[in-house]
Image (cartoon, rainbow, N blue to C red):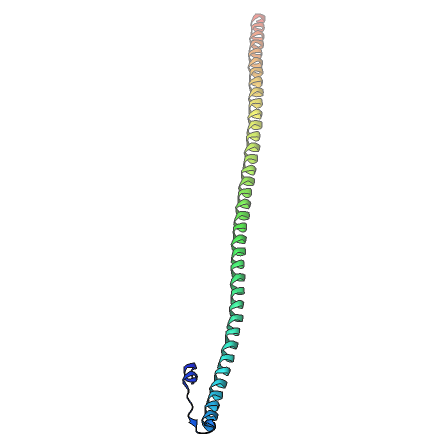
Length: 154
């Protein structure tokens, strides 16, 4: 491969009359053309490769940005879902507490009603018992009086 230094240091032998040897100059130019063509193709291929790699790099950076945005959205969505689930759980707990309190209140009311019925029945029984005792006492006195009257008649 011909280097810039080779070009700079190239010396042609001079002919007596016409200057440099045409054959040497033509051979050198042919070699230079071959090397330059080879280098030109290589540079063109490398530039195309660099351009392709830059396009790929842009594509990968776009994909990276998209993935980062997707990750942020996924994290945000996960947080939102967690918050919604917590709120729903809290709401369910509050509803359960409310239902339990309502049931306890209803049971307390039923207990009070049953206690009142019991107290009413007990009171009625006491009244009935007193009436019965009074009836028995009055029947006993009536029997005593009947016995007394019978004893007097005899």
